[in-house]
Image (cartoon, rainbow, N blue to C red; front, top):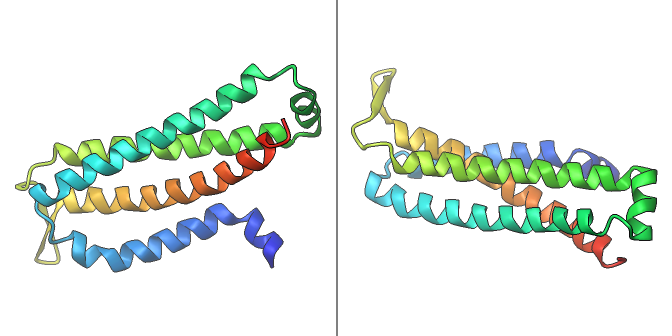
Length: 154
């Protein structure tokens, strides 16, 4: 069971994030632009800071390429997998920054109708951002723990 969880953690995180977004939607749907803007600004800033941490960890690997551990784990294939996970996390964090920056510029008047119900475009983009954010932060936690365990042996 634990091995399955370790192998498929990205899908498990996505499913849990989706379920959380379903429960969060009634709250987010009623937010105004004045409520969304400080949230979007803070989340975008935090994601940008975490992006910097992940980039620094990859830079550490690149600068230590002559290290015996780095060379050996490159040969075994562990290091490329770890770097790919870090790149995936960086992509998610960058997507979070972008989505929440876009939310900052969507006016309150941007609405659309579905089944005679008016839905705010900013709320839809924000809930997508929350989904990506939950995925990004959870993947950051997993990747960062793997990086810490690896770098402790350097």
